[in-house]
Image (tube, rainbow, N blue to C red; front, side, top):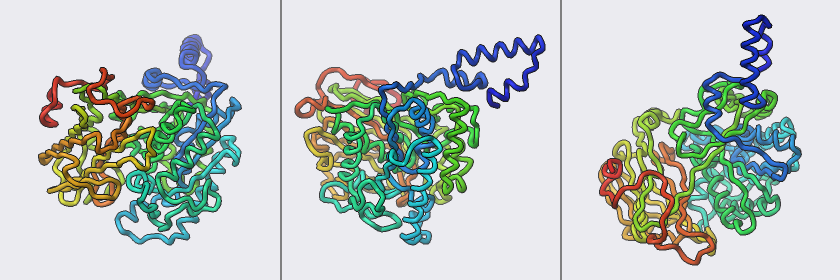
Length: 512
């Protein structure tokens, strides 16, 4: 029930005037916007608030048309009301839409022309939604990279590798004449080039971008490309980054249109992420509803899910960086609860559910100049399932496209090491494994002696992702320092519990 509805039902009898007084006091305490239930108030009050300032320049980075409203509709409205410069940039046109998993599972593939037409439909819907929020056409930018393929570009399409092929249109460059840079090859350097050009021209002070825990590959990719672009430019700008989450298991809850409710942190990410919130007025919530309704192609098929994001606040937060400078220090990068692993992604079909393998723990140890990743799975890897660890290094004095991009891929009986698509010698990485536990020793030299590292892990069945852990940023030295710090440097800020020495197995890690 909205504040106006609450007010209208109060009778000014003596006892109800007292109730009215309490409600007014609650409104003052909670600030402008709404009065909710006690549970919602306590949830909301536990998160610091985001405040826009009059000096701000706001950049919204959205993987697909509709993400700008789902994650940042309130930010956009408040920025426009304050007269702040704002720009909205879309990584893709969203042209694959819900067809992506059908293509993965080898159902009939749609004609490329129909896919491009869907991209133009979503392009126009984004303009209609922006008009509702008060954003003119000139403040929207579309990069046009392939929907549902940008994480693959991130993994395997840099330097001498060929451009990625779009899943359904089968093109290898941006096919839209109205894109930011038509005909740009589907390569990692090109996405970085576009983002860095926009950052240099617009000079944002606050950036709102998709989250590293998001279950959608394009959402992960946009966060990763943005991080690298900002590292490349950090001598000239240091905007504050606010990631927003869209795709995650059991979130948001409850599903459906709940305009008076605030969002709670996603299950499993309550403590690890430094969440902040933006409080919306009832009028702003209503405007977000009108804006998301403009994305007709999406709302018609996913109304209940999309309206779940139309709430009385918006949440933003990121993981802290992990600083690796101790000779022997250890960090939990991810720990999953049984409840989290017990709830499978809704989009999986029956055979994928039967073969599901979850990632229970990821634990990192630094020993001398070697990273030791310890991972525990929920069950052994079956014949159809693969497990992958991804570790990418960054140096400010070397183009990111030329840095190694290591993937260690495990099947049931063997493993392979890749740098992008190129198979590497197995002796470059040392592996010990049991059916459910894997230890990977990765020398820093194999990563190009990086200053920073981006890492994640995943399980998949064929091309369909089953489970994955969030991308984390590991820092080994300051970008201004020459070379990489030896792991025997000064003391670090460790996240998670430290154990006294190098644990022997993932089970021992947990017990320590």
